[in-house]
Length: 326
Image (cartoon, rainbow, N blue to C red; front, side, top):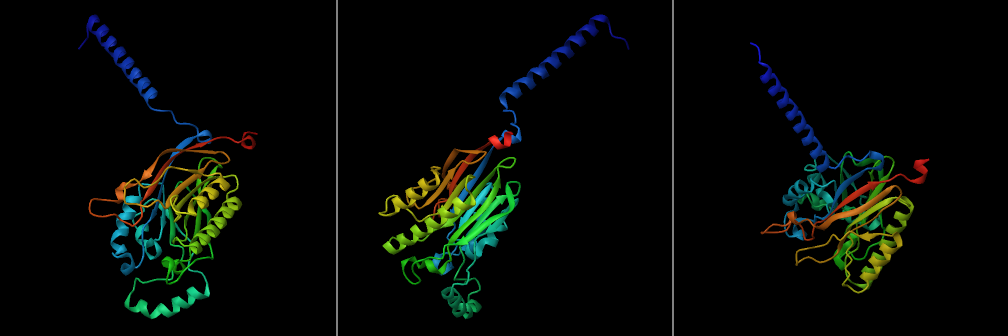
């Protein structure tokens, strides 16, 4: 079968129009979709969750944390970095839901004679209460998506100071401290992420302990992170509206050059005790895109903890330093 000349011309014009249309479509798509920036000068976003999960023994927590933890882990798995406080013996339940993330736990109970004695005395109770584990370690854990985590770049350290066994919130039943993990930004640039849980209580003694803990944490950041970009998040038990506390958090931020991400409780029944703080560093600029309360952890019936879940989404831009450019 042969085509007439007019048909050949018509077919050729149609093909040209189709090709031009495809080219135009690709051009428009390229204009609408941002081009990928080279990794060495790249930008990415990192989402951070900080959540005190109230993982105490059921009689103290007034519910069964084992029922809540799988839901907490399932919801937290969408974040690049999930930082938990008070997970105590429930970290494995969280870990089971955190697919694609690598978990790191904080310091253990240690060898403080008082905690060792309490552990021995309570050992018979565990026979009848299998999930009763105090005294505890720091109760901290960090879950980081595998491509972001720098393997073995970890520090965990207890504060070695507390106030109260049977009063003042019983803080000595946990060996509170801080946990640091290293994240990849791009190239050789790093971000150090810290999580902590400080002394509770409003007495002068508790405030003095918090001051000592923040002093130790600040010294650790200065030593371990030096010029690096830093994110510090957790349950500080510090409130701007409580006498003595405003100065603590302000002095801590100023000393390390940290800024408040703006993450804070949005629902009216929460207290302001938790923070996500940050700063840029060598080769890395951090900019907050969004921050607030992760309200998916609260539904109409109840919240999944007695603390708000806070989040911040950072835009991370890597830039060449003068040394790297040479």
